[in-house]
Length: 323
Image 1 (cartoon, rainbow, N blue to C red):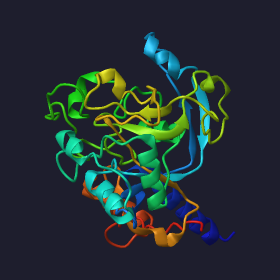
Image 2: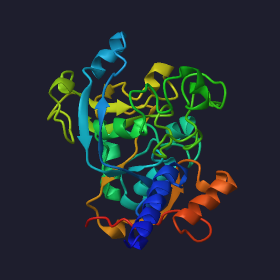
Image 3: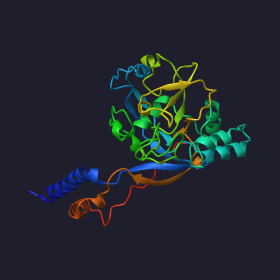
């Protein structure tokens, strides 16, 4: 009996098994792009589903708006890594002649170009998004992205409120939160699991949806867009002027779309059905420890078993965007 084919098969299987076992040690890259119109870095949020709403069944009255928990499925989308900055909004106003004259007031709370724009109403945010060729996120997209891949947690970093001062800018100071009564420069705190900054604190962010008190009970299971009408547009994320409970990923606020406050800003998203000349691809960044930080002996074993010559490289960013 010829044992050579069996030996080859066993060798192949052993290499595949080693590859599977070592996958957690590989560099996992997240696709990011730079949006050409406003220079915003955007992260790809993969399609998926999640439990939306108050999974902790919190007893507080202000959490009633976040019930019942319901499962939502979303298509993939890109989201701005940072909140829209003063610099970006100034560029929009200067290039389009958009009527906006609150710059002196903005400077009191966002005293630099790299701070988030504030004192913008929902219509201002929509006008900016239209100018860039993007849009505001739906409430479901916002919460899905804010969770950063975590399941059933209160905050973008987990459940521990004790570390909030090192993770977000909200009312008061302490830890890494050194900004009293104003915003912080975007990206001053650690990103969440999807590489998004300031999903908790700094400024509340406008969403596209109207608020509906009973919408969660009747929400479509896929790509919900919110009610057809309402008196207020949704706000998410907490702010420099709010308490720690407002930092929770499932807390819902809303305001009339004409309101401009010093603690409200926004960020944009885009679907994947966009022209490829709207953005520039950038290298994906590792989301957790790459193979070279593992033990050298394990690295050499892995490379020998799967026939990888030399050092492992970051996966290429070659996804084709539908147009």
